[in-house]
Image (tube, rainbow, N blue to C red; front, side, top):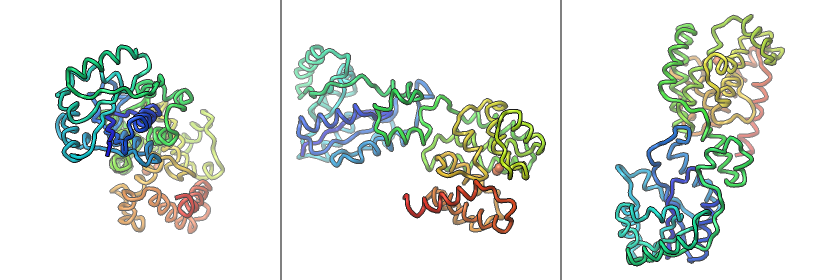
Length: 397
Ligand SMILES: [Fe+2]
Ligand SMILES: [Fe+2]
């Protein structure tokens, strides 16, 4: 077999990566191309930092429809420094009778001779070079000729005219959305939005601890203990479902921040800030603590992430088509360790880590069942959410 190995951080993977792999596959008759997801280099900018698992999942989504593209995640799981020569040596040992082709961009070619043991890499595989836009073809050819004699290996040019997009541009421009839309596979873009990646807002454990101090002052003791439970459960669920964990923890920490103020104050804050109040919310103003909490995030606690505000807004009723953070907070609020009155908590707590949508559905089921015994307390949004998840569980999965 002829096997391509395409190494990169893929932060994020975009159409050029796919096109280069396809071009190499066609030109060099490759049977399989492995996307070798590299460990992230030391972080320069925390806003650009996303978890290795997120990068891996995006590659997996992007190549799903390409039968000859595979993932190799060994470098993410290797302890210590992960060098390409180690991976190539391993791959050569695993495929003694196959021909290996190492795919790289022309930007990497320039630094290749300074890598650790480049001679080992070129002994294990032919090097296929994809020209990046802006890199002069003649210069690449000169470098290729030099390397051929320097390393006594095969260095070949992929016949592909790269477009201008680079992952670094996508990370910067992502918020402008339209400009990068065409550069990333649609499903990868959906994943980025759902998982709140490359957000201009990111949080640390210090941020969480500061908010915890504020909540301790703001909330009654029992409510504060509940809040700690929700924040910690949100953290654990975020790790499980690959959402930025401290963002989820901040949302958990603030979700009930408007719980310990008077009904009059909740109503007046809504009225003064054009926040709509439904009939049921007028009747039971405690229901407004989600909407007011979301308002407080930005106005009082300097937390500007829209997904956090949204999750807090909908945390009591849910909403049809909840996003990932909405579901994490909705579930964490219900199953945090301090809860002990709800039915089937054991099964809900397990389900939260196995099937988050199913857990959301089960909580709604129990909530609606409880509310039918107290019909005048029913917020119609809860019923809408329940109906949405009934059909979602039946049809859309
Ligand atoms: Fe609440
Ligand atoms: Fe709560």
